[in-house]
Length: 222
Picture 1 (cartoon, rainbow, N blue to C red):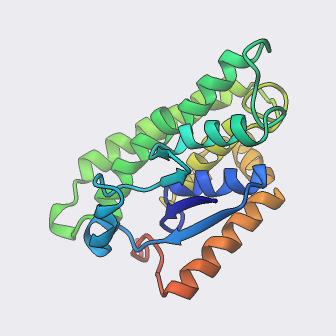
Picture 2 (cartoon, rainbow, N blue to C red; picture 1 turned 135 degrees about the horizontal axis):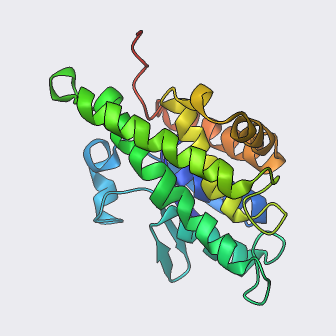
């Protein structure tokens, strides 16, 4: 049985969504965010204190995009993954990691210095700079997709989970309306997938059962 440690709508949502896509049975352990402060016992399982953590037998993984790749290749294969002999293999791997390293990273700076830090530690200049960086990278994604329905291989793969989650974060930080319309429509299609809906329902149920609140504090009025 696979076990996934998860916080509501955090990076670990990629892994949760991928689990629902591949149809592998799993146990979901929901934690308050950040667990390294609010669930100190978690450090005994994952000394990094980060999420996700996925354990599958002897396999332990903490990187959300890598977990998506692992699940697709071990439990599903094509069409959720792309084989090395397919022409789109390189584009698939690039998009899979682009979603985290290129699209999600600058958003975490915006999120930290607008919502997570106390008011006295917030950095408006960092927010402004990384907002511009974030929107520029999504404009680049639009050019890379060039009107395609998916990010690689002309089909839904776990690379779409990686990029789709980055768009989900864009919505959380209030920049989604500034994304190119084609990407807004792309995310709209992704969130209608049955596995996405099941993943959202699974985290809601687990959070309710454990009494875990949302990962982010309420957005302050502008």
